[in-house]
Picture (cartoon, each protein chain N blue to C red):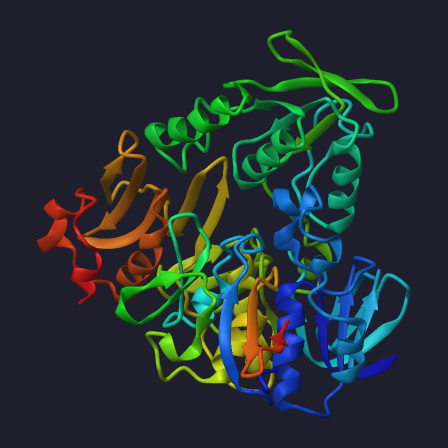
Length: 411
Length: 93
C-alpha cells in the first residue's frame, strides 16, 4: 500500500486541472493521477476537429502538458491503469495492476464512455466511435483509404466528422433515427438549416433509418438498413451518445445516478470523495437541479473548483454551460438549458432565410437557454442574461428582431 | 501556473487553430469573445473586435493583468492564443 495525499482518478482536463490547482497552493502534498489511457494529458476536444484529422494542425499540438510538467510539479502520472475497486471506509483505491493507494482526498474525474452500438456486426474493424486518442488515430489511418463512410447519429460528433470526411473526399451517408438533424434538441427549421448545408456539401441523409446489420468479413464492407437497403462502406462512426457503467463506484457506496452525484461543491455523498468533469452529475445552481454535461470548459472549471475544495476551500461551481461547433460555414451554439419543458416559451430570433436563426427559451419571462445558428456573437450576452436571471418580459416583442441589440438589455 | 516574468505587449489569436471552445471567454470575459464564425476575438477600444495582432494597450479592458492574460492563453485546448513580449519574443505557448 502506498500513501498519497491527493488521488485523482482520470488524467483528462478535469483531473489534470485539479492537480494543477492543488499544486499551486500545496507545494508538498503528494499528487497521483491515474489514467486508463497510455498517454499524458491531451486535447480531447481537438479530436473531432477536421483540421486535426487532416493533419493541418500538427499532431503534436494535441499534447497539452509536457512530460517535464509532471516531474516539475511533482505530479505522479500512472498511465494505462484503471481503478477497479474503492474502499471509502479505509480510503483505499485498488488499480488494475493490483497496486493499492491510500488517499486523504480522492477525485473521481473519470469522464464518460461512448455508448456501445449494439448492432450485429458492430465488432468488425472499421466500426468506430470517437472518445479517445486511440480512436482518433484509427480514424485518421482509415480515412486515408476509405471511399464511403456511414455516420450514425445526429449530434456534434457526426456533424464534425461529416465535415472532416467531406474535406478528405470521402462520400458520406448519415443514418439517423430522427426525422431531422438534432431532433428534438433543435426545432425542425434549425435542423433543416443544418441539413441544407450538409446536403449542399454532398452529404446524403437518411431519416428515420436504422442499421439492422453491419456486413463484411473481418473488416466492415457495408450495412443493411432495417428497410432492407444495402449501403457499401469502409468506415462507420457511431456518434450515439455516452453511457458509463459505474460498478466499482456504486459498490463503494458513492451515490450514482446516470453520473456520479455531487452537490454544488462537487462533493459526492461520501466524505473526502469529490467528482469533476463529464462524469459528475452535480447540483447546478443556475438551473436548480442536478445535471450532467459533456463539455470541455465545464470540465476544466470543475477541475479547478474541485482542486480548490480538495485543499479545504468551499468554492461552489456556478457557470452557464455552452457548446459550440462549426463546419461547412455554419456556426452552431447551444447555451444554458435548451430542453423544452411544458413551462417553456420559445421566442424565435432572426430566421433561416436571414441566415441567422436563434431560439430563445424562456421560463416565466426569464431566459433559460438558447440554440443559435450563425449567431454565436450573441452567446456572451445570452449567458449573462441567463446568469443574472434578467426579466425579459418588457423586451419580449423586440427579441425576434435581429437588429435589436441584446446588449441594451444588460445595460 | 500564471507566473509572468516578461511583460506582455502583443496578443494574437490564430484563427486556424481556434475551435471556439471559448475557454478564453470564460477565463477572461473582458478581453475575449466569440465572433460569428465561433472564433475568439479581442475586444479593443473603439468597439474594434478582431483576432489581432493587438497590442495590450488597445484592449478595451485596460486593467487586465498579464497573469490573467496568460491564464486565459493557457486555458486554450488548442494553444491558439499567442503572447509576445516587448522585444517581439513569444512568451506563450
